[in-house]
Length: 115
Image: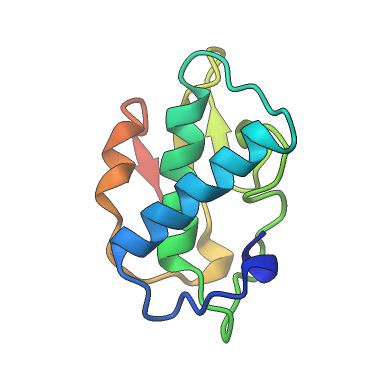
């Protein structure tokens, strides 16, 4: 999706990342008929905002398999969930990310580890 929208995210503000995440979710629901049960909508919103806030097309993530795809977010690379499909940890060491974590990340209330 990131490559399709043609927006330079290197200097995107957190508001722009949030807007793009909302647009992506709306498109998934309206165009692709994706249905988000329970807290999945909030989880996908938080994770996609995180991805968009840290994504740099000039230095793309080494591993971004499944991120912002129709794949269940618990199957996105580096995302670990508990038995209730709540995100409990994120491990993206290979991607050598460094940036501020967006405030939307606080919506992942079961998250206990990021590395």
